[in-house]
Length: 366
Image (cartoon, rainbow, N blue to C red; front, side, top):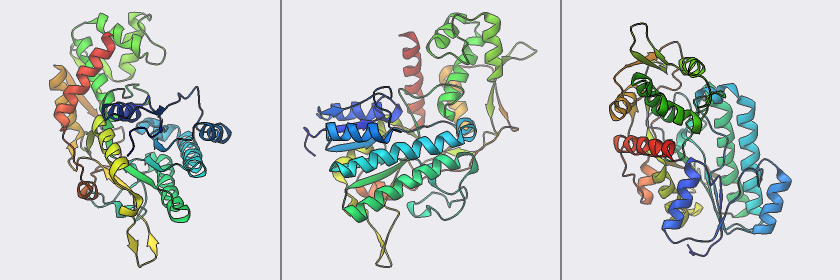
């Protein structure tokens, strides 16, 4: 792909978008178009149409989305389906209307049925019911896949949908009210260690960067203790510190370092076209052209917590609360298609956890 091509990255400040921008810059691309949410509301049809008409990007990477963990997905169901549908409908349609040469749409492996055979192949899509807690988000992402396929078939566009597994890395969301499981565990166990050591200075630094329900470094010690306890970081009666995590710890999850997701995305942008993916069923049906992005390896939530505990040096108790939901028990992706196209991950989960904790501490100290 031409290094001077104008590339619009939607969601350039997020976990994946920021990694994609960094990756493109490292590869010599220089002509970027970016907008913050305050500068461009992607749920506004009028605003998105005006933006595309003015900028005319050659390529689009659609990494913008409303995302969150199991709590946020279940609590804000209407917002998750509405905002994600509006974002992708507006961007994909305007990409077509303004002659965008290549678009990569980022979805999620939560598109697959709750009881999908493991590992989940691309052709498992729409074969049985979804996991209820994230059904609105999943339906929006399925619509994005079908929109890319449909525009390609009807209009001859080159829009590709990729479905990443659970991602983590720099610029992740560590908000305990809305974050995914891995960053939530990193922050909670980090705060547990601080409480264990009576390190109120470090706790204050953490809350200065990311207040919890309005509780910050300016709050009283009593207010801080109360909000930490609410989120499962507390002293037990015997004086030891307990960190409460949701569910049984038994669910298996696959985790991919976000900078590797970025690398896979750029690889696909540079080397893969819709014509490489359009498998035909019964000589008439084109479907399941999306690509799983992952490691093809899984680890239990309990084992991830153990790794984080060791990396951080927490000596207290990790308690899994079985009264809280587990979500889907397994979500392992089949990455055969991705490997056949020529890309494979390199960063294993233990190395990634060490990296993300170093990044988190450095961020808090800046």
